[in-house]
Image (cartoon, rainbow, N blue to C red; front, side, top):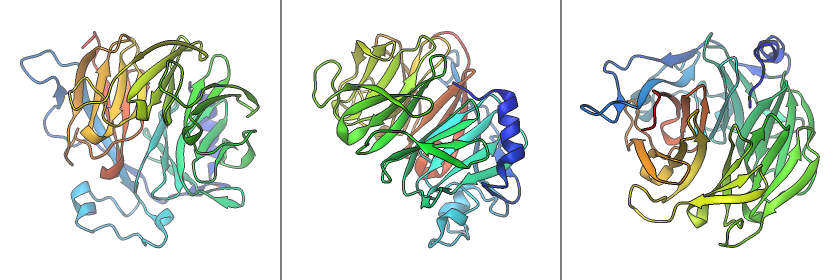
Length: 344
């Protein structure tokens, strides 16, 4: 599901001629004084907070300063902001580069978590982004869905537009990558369909259709492909997660609407860790819920707020090597956590 390390480094060497290169370095905030874990003592911890990132260059302000109005970017040109505005989707490659869709800033931001370098993709050829939602990086390509432009774009590693996915989309949102088979899944939310494409953008087929039965969708959004090649679909207005064996055949579903912790009120991002635990962002509850493959709630973490480890209407999530990256959308940051092993 990742770019190779070589491809990631090659990308950085070539980024500036096409992408907008931000001045300064990203501030990776690792200053949490106390170790933050879930569950708390005396239980054995399963999730630990690592760090967050929100700004770079001259805008090295904390979240409190941002809400107090210290951020000096021009509201008429949010693409110039030296910070994240409304991060939504997140992807991480093997070189630990964050790829972040930020519809609030009308751009895709790429942050190197090792060196702190920052780059942006601001447009798709002659078209400025209107609502970039999801991003994946694969074999030297960067794929971006824009729900309002109704397209999925293919960029090379330098950020130059190469092509778009074939076929008509109504509102393309989530992208899911099967790196083994070279298949890219696209959630077309208002078409209640998930389309299958190869990595060049050629359409291969579709699953779904509007409804409540098994294999049908009611506004699908976020996607994930696990190590088996099984596809997980956030079936948002059916308040459930559906799993498709091999990305095509309905296998299982879990979730129902309700305010109990084991239910789903506003499911968004989804990801799976090394032990097949499924992480679902429940945005309205400001938390990430962890389920086993049968849909039993194991643990949740987060909670509403602006402090380390808390969320405000989070959206996307990504897991690589059991590090969990969450797009904390209205706190304008990405937060990182670690799964500590063993089933919660």
